[in-house]
Length: 333
Image: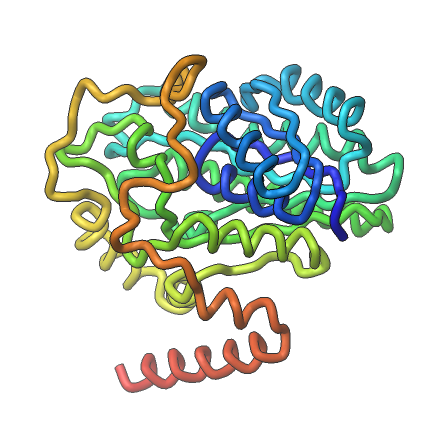
């Protein structure tokens, strides 16, 4: 399955960077879309060193014209697109009332509409050929909102609903284009150094934290096996989403009590730190942030749950066991 044409949005850093590198290691031709040119240059070099071919196109995914033009360029220079991976996002760490309407709109345009525009651009090329796979990189927050990330949670919920609706349409059309979603846990990415932050301390991912390579392996597997409607990565993702189905009110109160502290370090925030809401912090001549954030000392590079999820028989047995354990615990309470 090597030698395919893969397009990755948000490829300049974090999960998108790790995903691009993972496809490059399979000798794929990888199209890289993002705003930050320093990060794009670094991602292209990563792909080439891994063994793939790279084409970087600076693109703001919130502008559908730029996304469509980038897709056309990928088709001309790399060949017919086989896989499109939507990753690009931005966010604001703040209580809802401290996020301006303009900021909320921008997060929605990038994080939600960026997926819509990327999916549309992919389908315009895949549908006539009746071939292709679209992978939506989601989050536990696509199902379970948490405090201090209302704009991001709203966008991820919207992606979930949009993807489900589109999947039904593709099934109705008997299309061979597949769409799947990968729901991720907290990941050690540079986003915590470049998102707009109005918290008193530096933002951080909610523990346990995984390295972006864990996410990348899950995305590559989903692209290879798109018949499954979605994949969950990380034990905390599974327990959180199951608890949200069974006792959402309890989870509301738990997150109200713990969610603020769990998303901040003990280090005071720097009010002068640049952020990427409107402009990339890794613009031309800027810093290349790479795939990893500042939490390498605690992030893990393996997920037993993700390994099990890639094996359907084990996943079914583990799911039944976990559901039984949760039901038993709830009955005792």
